[in-house]
Image (cartoon, rainbow, N blue to C red; front, side, top):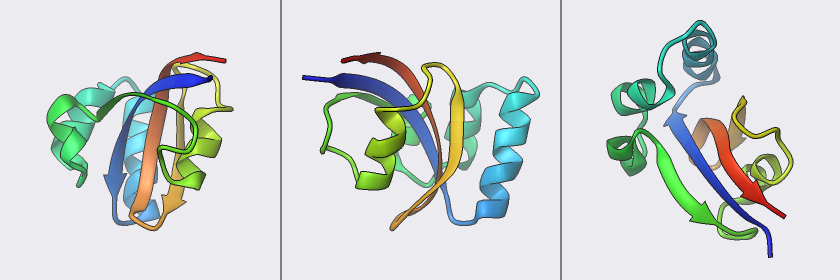
Length: 93
């Protein structure tokens, strides 16, 4: 069964999500940005969600995690919780 490890950050607006993505693409540390700005409890670990399988996260999140290139920041991804940036840190199929 497929497994992935990922980290993410969660904010309430698409505009803020895009701004943070730009900062990360310009060299800011994803974990530090997540600790400062994310509204998810995972921010304490720099957004690290650990390892999980398909179906353990909301569908919009799963779709990206199990298809996006590893180590590339994806988003904004809109879910019922808000807007996410996410980065798959590893995946096995």
